[in-house]
Image 1 (spheres, helix red, strand yellow):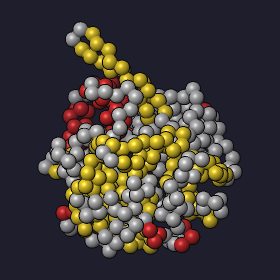
Image 2 (cartoon, rainbow, N blue to C red):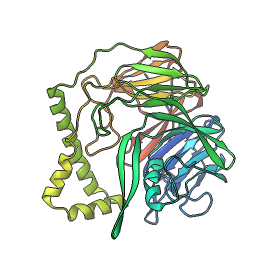
Image 3 (cartoon, rainbow, N blue to C red):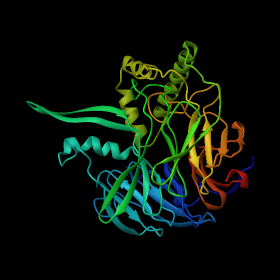
Image 4 (cartoon, rainbow, N blue to C red):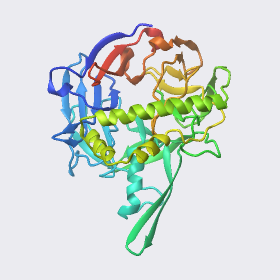
Length: 409
């Protein structure tokens, strides 16, 4: 399948095109592209947002750290673009969402609502700030967005002993998909759907079924929460109206699979270590100092942590899920002889070539994009637009905007 290139952003001669780390991408209804780049200014890590028109030309670039309205303390690089062009940036440091207009002008701040067990105690609040920074968010309509926290802090307690204060944290699975609605000065959060959570497994267990979701144009959501190929279609109230299935053989986790997976994780961990040593940015400098002071035994223990994992009993069949602007589903399968991609952990595995099924929410199978020509979309836009992050010959991120053929939209 051919994907026509429309334009690309990054690696150009102008200063605004010098991208460092793309952490958020979105389109609005007019086809404008929004890019969140967590780069550095004068050696300080920050977040810049770039708006590009449908011709690939700069509209505006904005964003800076600070304590005032529209300035951020701890964003985590997240951004949601609402259909009419409003931009929402969660900021755990301010405990609020910054809202900007499509011209980049700051409009207002909306407070993040406090949850059970939260208070003004800085020691107890800090883990909750970590939660907010690690949320997965995406546009969910003109008045809010969808939010999912992959890891929830189950227990946050203060214990005080002479001379010190501690917080104990117990990580667990988060399977709630929330709708965050802006009403007045405070956001309102409502649980839209709750995915199935396997019992008896820890957060770091390999091959646990992912909780994947994609917002639909009608305000509903498509999601996957099990090892099988089953995509649930929920309406705007969160009621599941249908389940889309495809039948593929299960892949049980044998001892041969465990050994092969551990070998690939160790290979990836060694590559990560070499990459950290080679980086020249602020993070690389910090990592370089830490590695220079580490003993050989400490480095080996770090590498060995990549393979100290428990295993779920079978390998999930769905590795990723997206919805186009029109609402057609893209379902990325786990590679037939490979493993699901991973976003956290030492030696995490990246996305290997894999086919993508194109299916309507009504269940009509449109076709499959072969593994060798499949792309990993960062955002879908109107008129078949799709943005894909690539790396140039200097390993600098470049955002390529393509146009999908009609059947894939």
